[in-house]
Image (cartoon, rainbow, N blue to C red; front, side, top):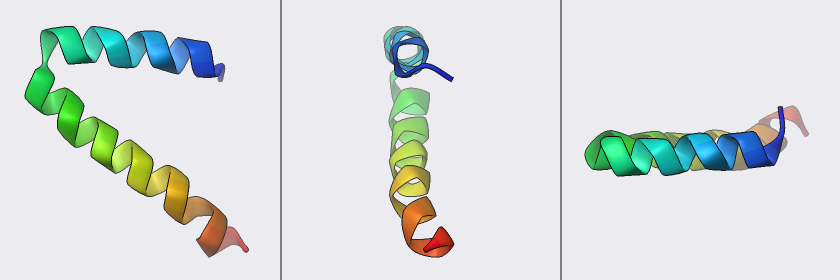
Length: 40
């Protein structure tokens, strides 16, 4: 997946569902930061 595609999706989510975007963003950051430590 492209980072640009994710960025566009996040912008749409942020505009339409601010609260859902906030939850998704926190989960997304948690996954992306935890993945390297668990795989390493």
